Length: 451
Ligand code: GAP
Image (cartoon, rainbow, N blue to C red):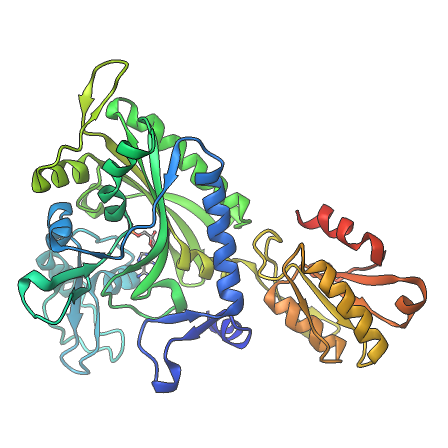
């Protein structure tokens, strides 16, 4: 991961958060190009799963939710991680990660005592100093607690959302009452969630706050397996749409013991990171767990009446969840390329042009007023249709290198010939092939290759 994380920082994809104050562990800021890339992934997701469908509506719910929501959902008791401390160097780590990394055994969902037993039986040591003197495993809740207002009492307690789903469930009745939706239908949401996690670095793979894209698809449970399989197919298709390498992704179904407390079936899409296959996204059959409990706790009926059949029931849900921050990291990993050209290593991001942060870069070949004026004119035209950058640093090799590392599919160079024949050089990122295109045909050329 080191060269990739170095590129992310060098080229403005990702920075450690609050760095001038020494940073805050496990928090990262997306820079200009990281933000553009993440937004492109989000927009493609929103278009595919909301705008191009007639059975999906959107919501942008509050990130602060009252304790009763999390009591009813089961997160106050069930949303836990297991931690363990080294008695020698006081390093704190996640017990499940310690076991999974050392003996490759999936242990999500096991009790603290069961985890302690595995660690002792396998004589596992501290990942930092190697000492076998470890505490017993303890569980801790992942929700970030906060206070509203100035009076510190139980009444002022609230939680930052630990998942998007609860904001969606809070709006299920609003959607039914106001949006003319009928089962089956989905409510989609994109935004930040917060989890008080202990993590082991690896860039933005696991952080304290991160972006998710998620929807709850409300169904009659009669044929949930068919609907589950349908959404699995759609999730896989989205991976293809954004250009993820299929050989590096796979499905993995959770065994019963590792499933979240709310799920009857969970299958993850795993991506092969440099540190192994890890969860990228997940799909879960949450049954009527959430709506049933919210209905009981709030006293508000959340049932659905089918006007055709007269059947009344609490809908079940299928939940496809896409980790967006993690996906952005995975996309950078997936597209990172090194190749030797003329004895020198060329680094580039082979990004699908649909998601590339910058589609076209325009430069004058040299620092020259006439070339500069021409190049600026081209840039002003192209930027109205495609995300475009202008660069006049002067050294063509350096300008290509920079755009390669950002993943820009096309670079346009204006040279002295251009001033005579109005043709520019278009250089293709992946092949490094160059071709002359008449300036008047440039938008058409990019329209064919980028749209
Ligand atoms: N509502 C279901 C839900 O939130 P989850 O498996 O807890 O499911 C969904 O999380 C996705 O969020 C994961 O598949 C992963 O991509 C991402 N994710 C989970 N924890 C994360 C963290 N600490 N940092 C970054 N991404 C994370």
